[in-house]
Length: 258
Ligand code: NAI
Image (cartoon, rainbow, N blue to C red):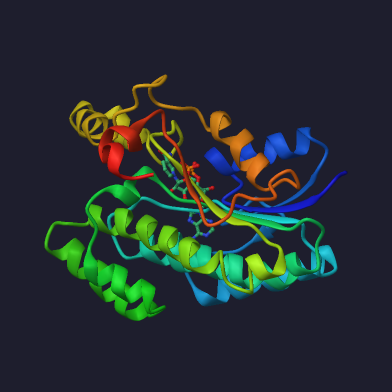
C-alpha cells in the first residue's frame, strides 16, 4: 500500500538514500532541505520549522504516514544543537498532527554513535528543559573553551533522550505512533568527508568509532532499516535508539548496556 513520507535533510547522504529507497518501494516522499527539495526550510530557526509544518500541511492536505527527521550538521558550534536537537524535535512535534491523521503512522530521527561519547551536561540540561537559548549559550561556551566536539555528541544524546521520553507518552504510543532513532556509525557522506580526507582526523575517527563489521558504511546501508522502522510492519519497536554502526556501540559500551 503506497504511503506518504516526509524526509528532512533529503538532498544529501542518508536522507537522499532513504528517499530513493522509499520511492523505489512505490511511496510518495516529500523532501525538505535548505534548498532543492519540495519544501525549503532552515530547521536551525523557529521560522523555518514553522514553515516546514505549514507547507507540509498544504502539500498533503493534513495527512502524513511517516516522518524521517534526518537533517543534521556536525559543526563544532551552536548551530549543531539548533538543527540536530531542536530542529529535529520541532519537525516531529510540528508534523505529529499530520501523522495522527495518517495510516499506520511512524516517526524516526537519525541519531548517532556519537551520542555515547562524552557530552556537555549544560547543553543536555538545557535541551531536556526545552530551553534553546540556554543550550546555544552552553554550546558557545564549549566551543570557546576548545570543546566544540561536545556540541555534536550532546545534540545527538539530547535527541536520543527525547525519543526515550516522548515515545511512551499518550501523544506518540497512545496515538499508535512508534517513535524511534537510528544511530549510525561512520557513514561516507559530505558530512564526514572533510574528517576522513585528513589522515590525522581520520585516525581519530577510527579510534572513536571502531566498526568491526564491514568498516565505514554507505548511506544506502541505513536506508532499509529506516524504511522498516517507518513501515506498517513495525508494530512493536518504539522508544529505541537502534545502533546501525558495524558493532561500534557493542565495542564502546560492552556487555552492560543494551
Ligand atoms: P549530509 O551532509 O550528507 O546531509 C545532511 C542534510 O541535512 C543536507 O542535505 C543538509 O543540507 C541538511 N541540513 C543541514 N542543515 C539544515 C538545516 N538547518 N535545515 C534543513 N536542512 C539542513 O549528512 P549525512 O551524513 O547524510 O547526515 C544525515 C544525518 O545523519 C545527520 O543528522 C547526521 O548527524 C547523522 N549522522 C551521520 C553520520 C555520518 O557518519 N555521516 C553518522 C551518524 C549520524
